[in-house]
Amino acid sequence: MNLIWQPGPKHTLDPLLLPMLYSRQEEPGPLLCRVHTVTLSAQDFDEQAIYPRLIIGPSLQSITINAFRVSSFTEEHVGVISWSNIGALLRSYAPKLQVLKIDPLYLNCDFVVCPLQSAALNEVIRNLDALRVVEAMSHTVDNETLWTLATLPCLEQLTVSLIDADLAQFARQWQPATGVFRTLRKLHFHGVDLTVCASILQLTRAFPCLEEIKVTGEKDMLWVLDPFVLAVSQTENLSRNVTSIDLKIEFIPWEPFSQTTPTCIDLPSISPLFSLAQLRILRLDLGINAILDNDALAVIGAALPGLEVLHLADPAIDTIPTLTITGLIPLLNSCPRLSNLAIRVDATRDVAALALSGTLAPHLNLRLLDVCRSPISSPQNIALFLASLCPKLIHLSNTWRYALPTGEVYTFTMNQGDNNHLTMWDYVQDLLSPMMQQS
Image (cartoon, rainbow, N blue to C red; front, top):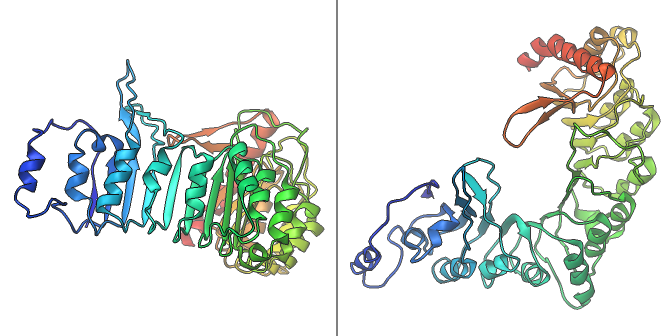
């Protein structure tokens, strides 16, 4: 049984209701004891926590707690949530809980985020040794909480926000005899520097089962890619097991791109990852230049033939990339399972003759193609080329259009030339639509 309590006004219940209900049982406990999954508001745990105590029981395997407070348009009321009470209730009635998600990121104007106190997550997860999934992006966790997470015996998936100082302190306090994150398979750190993250990944007897690594950063963060890439490639467990690397800094399309970033995505920065035999997903959306040519992309494809997702996003606008759209041919030939590709190319050259020559081997798995802000000059020829090379393509996108968290899609062009390129890519989309609908 799955239950979702919708947030909103609730009628006040008589404080004697719960004792009266429990008086019908020989021992106090949940009345709906077969509930496996539930979504609750943090407000539900106020006072006597009537709603949670009705449904949280030994069968509960997954709980999502929405940590927000109802507010009005004129005045916001943010209360204090008793996370210690939430943890005590879970430990008492749901000791075998496997999935805990704290998700306060509601953008609806009817709600206001209630910040998660720094030690709150530790109060909730302490002694919940059956936890396999913990997601709590609402606030940065402190060093003590990170140690609790690191020693959970069954934890397989972790998503948390951190600051560099706490992560660095964790690395300093670690002892070689201490195994940490022994069962973790999926890791997502938010808000940390890649260099600090690399120091954690290199710890001995840490992350022996880690398969998926995701690090996300805030706008204006500048990451240096090399230390992270070297840490992953030179750590035996990681080089053997990792199947997915996803690095992303939020990209704000209406802000001009700076060409003065201290690092870039190029072949030398990526090549250490060639030792990852199981790598299937590589996303590098760092808000920095991708300096690649056709030969470099061919080398990447030959070295990582198992790739299913490849994002080498480049936010540049006015420059002409050295990588041309025909450079996709050897990449797709080398990576038969590639289904999702994001890359900026020079699509200003005439490829009609190549497309009509019959020399293209169609790639039957590529479904999603993001061209970033690629320059283009002949949409008819590009459409013909893509139809021949990627006949199963179902979605062609770009980074001129930006989906806001509210669900709205905005279009941002920096100048007339930028606008012309977007218009031509839209025409390519129109020309390919009949093929995409059939796929």
